[in-house]
Length: 470
Image 1: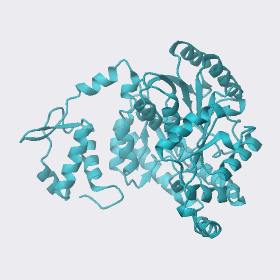
Image 2: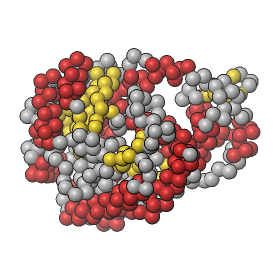
Image 3: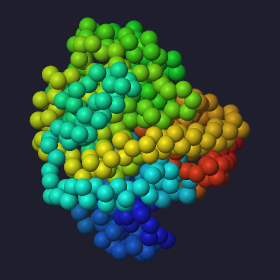
Image 4: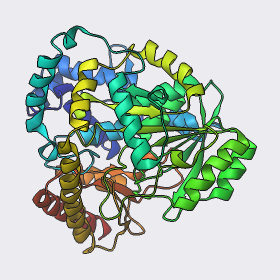
């Protein structure tokens, strides 16, 4: 029954079990199939089933009775977590859902907010690598400085000063191994256990987990099509006194919303007034469809309260994991200290290789073509949605559409059916840690699948949804 694909076999067993647990085939404290019987049923080794059961045990989903077997854990611990005074306790209860849908070798993959590898400039990297090693024959044996390659930092500072009026020096740039590491470095440098962290709702799930693991108590502010409620944010800054506000104000993940210039100007003023740092994650700033988005919040910050994260991995070459933190010099020593403990500096080869591409005309040509290709895919998905009674926001950039099912429908049930039919998406509950909304919402990523796959996959998903509504 099990197939040999990119998902490890024990994860396939976990997926098999979780789909049936969520469907109610087994209830609380009910005994699960034995290791032997499940291995025979699925056609896998007993050790594979044992490993799957052990992982589910670690997650608290199953428990063991001596000489009896595995049983479904009671739901009480989960209920207590959801009702806890500190909402960050349950900030990432849906991690397993995201892991499952993104690990699924789905025929129609709408859960991955990534670029189709076929759209990336893959053919140039071998040539760039050869040229680079000819110029720097000892490069593979050389470590980077903790802060990052000076040539790359200078190039990024010059580019963002010219294009976005950042007025940066190379000393105000820290190279990281991807945007997620940048968030982690900032969290560990600025947040102490018990500190409040203000965060958007809905929001990027791994960021919640990073701040939660640092011991932060999460405070949520809703994002709407018109942007933030600045009165609410000021009230929260005044009463909760958050250490920082983590935000994705341009093509927000998952909603695709971009906030206005007026709000971008006002947020640094509030940050200065209430002593709250702004962490601006701008990982898809260059993926716009018509007009370039407004200048980043960092542009309007005159007090040094904004830390800006810019990632290039996702739409240039994911394997290099190149991102940067831009901030004023008084914050850099603390960030460098954490970066030193993390990996002592991102790989120099990756930095030099990216620098070569960043300084070439090829990158600008690539981005122009990439924007066109992704916009076409977005339009195909939106055309499919027009045949439904769902609601959604048409994004002006980014990689996702944030949609909502009609009253009476639930994305959990739809996800169960769609995964069986090899269609993957991310339910809205993953992005809503407080569980106050999101049961009818879903994120559909249009950048990973090709146009024909989008048409076929959306037709299958919409047909499944109609079947549930009937």
